[in-house]
Length: 248
Image (cartoon, rainbow, N blue to C red; front, side):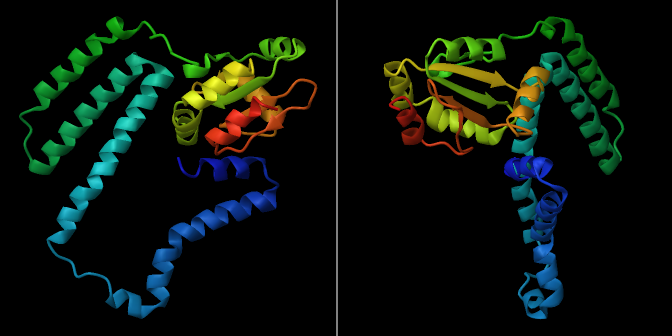
């Protein structure tokens, strides 16, 4: 997720710029191995193999499990609870089969399949989509180009932001900036209208709007001051910067 901005920029840059971005990413990933290969003194500083490797492997499993939980949450938000249940059931079966293959125990296949079948039986119960909460303290309305045109024509200042549940930068900005009382109070005083475009499921209309803004992904933050062209804000927001918009 930390490479989202770089990858998004690579998609809209000229060919030479895109190649430079991916070459830089590849060089960064390969640099430790290149240093070890070309500088023998570094190889002598590597720790000797031993029991610490198993402990280190267990430590590294923690962020892997956390990543899996995060991906499961994103799957739920993108495809619903039914897809989440299918994914968890498949993970359960594959995990148990892998464990049995490693331990040469094949006695738990029946319980594993029974657990997966029970999970799949819950699909009709979870088929109804859950209501999505939007807006937060800013009381944002769902974005549409018609609504944006209506608000700008009325002479009100408008703040528009585009987000997605899988966008880490978006969620950090929302929690650290957009959901802060100082920003909400400033927008209330300035009678700022707020629109939010949720691109979690790849809405085609939002995608076309992003393309017209020269963007291939989120986040995108736009400020429409009355009588002025829209201003594109940085992808990393601060409370002071956003709150000051209402005073312009």
